[in-house]
Image (cartoon, rainbow, N blue to C red):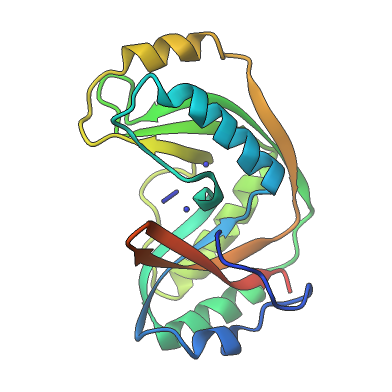
Length: 211
């Protein structure tokens, strides 16, 4: 899954983003999710590929490359006091071995006949699924519902208002079956805050893990 998706600056020390200082200006409920950030080089590669695809379906709502994340767990609207609980729970997870992810393969949710989401896939070792599972379990203990569907790592490139076939896009994808958009290393993940603005959703890193 490339869900929903950081534009906020990371001004805290490299070792840790201090949650208490970040939370002080949050409203009573905060829209949050847990995700892996993408390097600038990967964002640039996504932007170039989106530009090529865009001409085939201009009516699609394309995700801004800087807003694309690898979502591990979407939490939704969370009370301010519970954000602190979430942060401490994620901080208590055991460290994980860094791993590498390759961005490759395209597809649609739920399928190409009635697409709602256009995505690019990820080839990753078991460590990614294990990390997502640990996050899921940790959040379930705090009362967040477990996901009904299995974890399917992807990056969302675009969404469609009307779920109808996209033959021009599909024809272009046939020529890109073996295309790879790069590889990056994962050694950390973040708790994000999401805020709506006139220009779309804006994201801010609340805290980094492991600390």
